[in-house]
Length: 129
Image: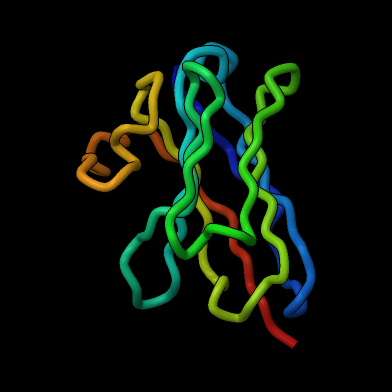
């Protein structure tokens, strides 16, 4: 059974850092890519980052470059998303997903987000004073 569970969200102050976690079924993490998306109130879901299952290559949406870091801990079946220097505009529900592919092709420009068939329930991040 394909399962992804996010955690680590919360209410944080601007300028601080936060680490989100996506715990996945063991068979997923060993082979498949995992991506992070976010959806702010009233806005469309947007890409954040992806880590490939084939070689651990990492990719970031333009808005995420510089402040976001994706990594994976195979021993704990977990993919992490670190967010530094949080801003109020980072407020969103953060979701992890997989398209059961080895690469991040569907995350990259020209890819098909609709191929991400399996999603977690999301974790809320609120950046506010």
